[in-house]
Length: 293
Ligand SMILES: [Cu+2]
Image (cartoon, rainbow, N blue to C red):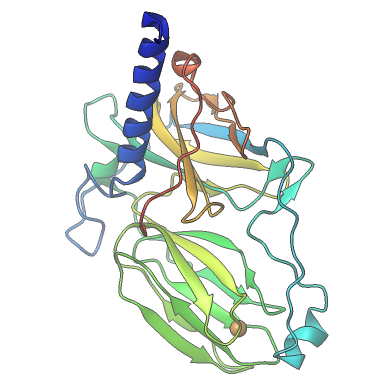
């Protein structure tokens, strides 16, 4: 028979698993108004006391090794990128690149929600380059309605294929030397997979956000989210690893004109790290995302 204490623990673990599952499947725009282009919201005005969230993304344990990609189906790819490797996990000295970190939700001082605001759409296009038969960057965050300029820097034809869940499927061929293609995502979505129909190994992920409070971890695992109104937030770190990607969430409080730290850890044995202090007694559970987001 299990002791009363053990039963309590099991209950707690089960409840946490259910909560994590529920939170991993909520819609990104839930709790907020439709993004710009769908009715908008009130414009956020900077107060001058915004802060930052900085952190590092680590991999606990031995990270999966990148595998060499067989590019022999296209000699142009082989000659330009003879040593192409998989980018599912880009880990250097235990630090993870290409993690998309964003503020999911939070209530501001005046009881409004961060998701109720619009932050304007940048006039500058975000660039997704096909270069050496892989995408640069591998993970890209844009604002809803922002232009995404898709360039082909290769001596071969690519076929870029956005396969979002909340935006229309978009599939365009682009020959070498062609003018950039321009695409935009009209609905918030974290994150839409992008593939090349010519080169099956080519894959990237694009997030369309209502607000600019996001960042992608660099090669040293670091990220910085600037311009954050002071308040407590749910911050999510999303990584493509796992069957359909894996996300970790953390409560983070940003002080006025100050900085908050949010370190996340992925990996099979990523226990307890990257958890808020109030949850330190609860075992960390890696939750594979269910379904397509
Ligand atoms: Cu391609």
